[in-house]
Length: 48
Image (cartoon, rainbow, N blue to C red; front, side, top):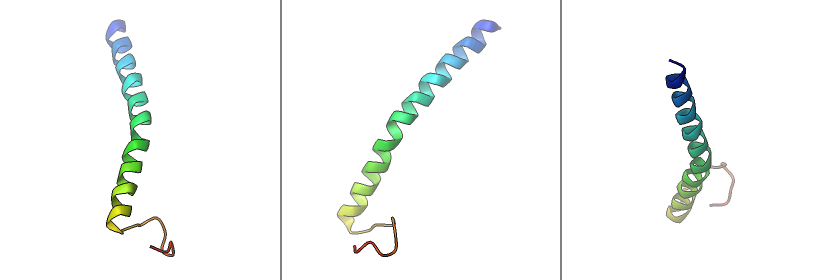
């Protein structure tokens, strides 16, 4: 049972770190694509 918990913990930590490093890329890509389309939902008075 201990090895299953240890394996699950290792997989969880690796997945968490992957998400932490990948999320900024997703947010950046989202904002770049919307900026190219001329749509920006960051603020109401952003001049776009």
